[in-house]
Image (cartoon, one colour):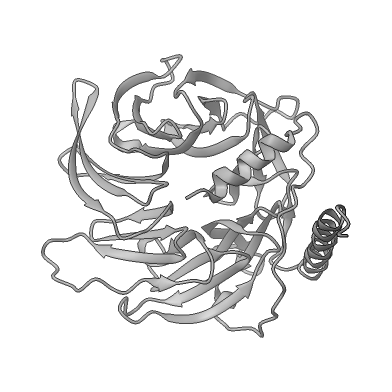
Length: 400
């Protein structure tokens, strides 16, 4: 007769083995990439100068000094995980904008530096009927764009005098949660906006301002991914996208260029993030991707034949974001300012890691580790996620 407890024993034994493998990997990688330990998972990150702003699942946003790794400020006030953030400059003031599972968008004064104050809340807006998943600012026209699990894209006129934010229109075209946004201002005052959802649909829009209300016209639709769009980068000529379908792909947008569509860049697991360095101020012909625990560096001098330069076992849980950091320092010998390109990665292992780009371009020996299961870290004191909330978070991050 079969012991009814055998299945439970097997599950527990397997869980312990995988947990042990994960623990060993975390120990092996504990000093790789100059890690900064966080109390919770980084769900979003923005880098400016030598500072980074991080949205955490612990209901706080924090700013850290990337050189020292120390937290410089906490922004407390959300009632759920902070799922997205962005920065906006209003005159001489730097404003942090956060979105959360509590369905609100909050504006914070990111300039105030008082050691006895941990938040500088400017305004709070009940923005959506479900999680706020993505935020994007077009600074030249003071336009904030938000995407949500409620499938809506909403437009907001940015103003420090408006409390809460003033609605400036919306889009209801997507039938699945809006995962990511990118856009740019056009010379004629219009805005080009790109939106991607969890079904893999990407749409390109032209936004027109009419008396502080924004209306949208669909310019193009892309269906080259099979499932969730995890990140996208838009330029005047190219659209780079990453997806849970295990690919990174590029589409050419310029009608003047009749180029064939390059083949997908395939990975072994879902691709959570991509950084096309040639679309940044650095303008180097590389892209960096995050798939599972691994970071990969490709030379895309020829987009039709991308060359894998390096594969780095970077974290012991999935990489969630990759950002460029132009690290600023002062040369002690001649007192001159020095700027060096670094790469910042975040992960579900609750670390931020810092990598010198020049070193990532040099391949290193690979070490293969067995796959490991997801084990929720202990949340920051003051906010504890229930088992159901942890499962919901993992479903949100991994859903298709």
